[in-house]
Length: 288
Image 1 (cartoon, helix red, strand yellow):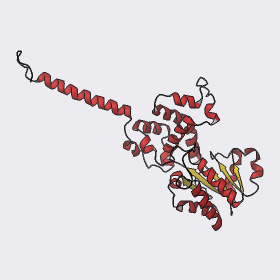
Image 2 (image 1 turned 180 degrees about the horizontal axis):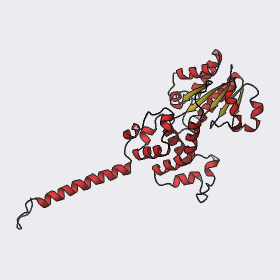
Image 3 (image 1 turned 180 degrees about the vertical axis):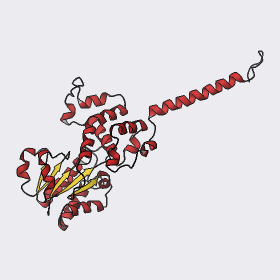
Image 4 (image 1 turned 30 degrees about the vertical axis):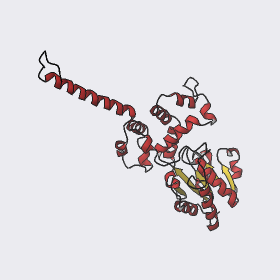
């Protein structure tokens, strides 16, 4: 390897996926694989020799200087914030991760997962997620220092649809892998991808993995709630150029039902008014 490699992800932007890919690459090219969170106590020693490092939330704390080292190349993975929200909410409803089962201060010691599950509608569950865990994830996404010359900014969407590995080969070359290492990298990427050798069945971290889930999941009400909390996120990350996407969303089932009831009531009132103003029937005549 020409450079040491740092892989920076965020919650629900492909962290587990990239962990599998780069762990396999490190094994096959013979360098140490370092998990930032679990090996935090021994990072100084681990980063003194050739390494591939993965950080699941892209917050490097007192090790932020690593990102500016001349011998480091970075892969930073982002994802459409709307799909981050969808993936996070569904994952948090069923995951066994310990923090989801710890009491939340201010919620009568109810756990995060239980609080999420007891909310009456999917809309309420998404709003709760927006105001808690996903809020932190999107804050980290927006606060990342973009524009580093030694960093490849990759979108989850491009990676997820890269069955021909064209995008991945560009990433591998940027990260400094030589020709034989690029072959290893491509094989590991394929074997650990849903379009390749990785099965979705039995994988507790994968519910869908599809791109643009928001197009079928977001209602207009949910879109407006999202914009109220994250007004600049989509444009800052280049996923939208304005807010016109809201107009293309379907109405929520509740909103649509109310609209239908209003239309029915108006039509009924018109019929009643028309009947009232028509000529009355003779008292001895039955309507036909």
